[in-house]
Image (cartoon, rainbow, N blue to C red; front, side):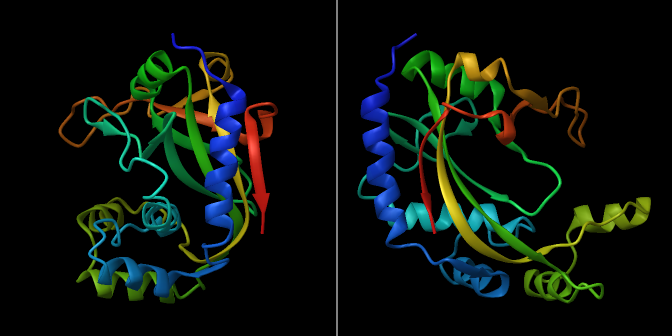
Length: 223
């Protein structure tokens, strides 16, 4: 495994952080963000978890001069960016009951650590507001997409519960998290034993508990 230079990584994180600090909007309106992605022909504008994809969309715009975008690929899995180590862009709501985030494919992360010594997560943390009881935002998004998705139709057939959509995000902090083999030992797994609709097994993903992190956060910026 390649050794990592934490001082060099911290300098990289500070450089990225400075760029984002002076270029990112703080308040993200769901409708405006989705329309911005749609008008730019960004392929993920239809996703209901728009906040994470909007952060990725912004990072790809703002960081293309200082990061390789996208990053390394392992099988079908690509990291979002690369600078010394592979990085992924993630977003998390601070006003929620769970502070675990789904990171990336377990095998891709293990291979990234093997090749580069570590992989990183650039995490946007903020406060969210949710859809009203009439699900006005959800209905607007469905209409914009041209109707309900197959997933939503199947969910309704099963009578499954539909969670409220996030309608806005106020950016409070960006953290730079380093994942090594030692960190993986503290992580859980998501999709273990899950299968796709065609019966094939889903790739297991790393589940990162933010409340258990300490030295793994090498840099952060507040907004």
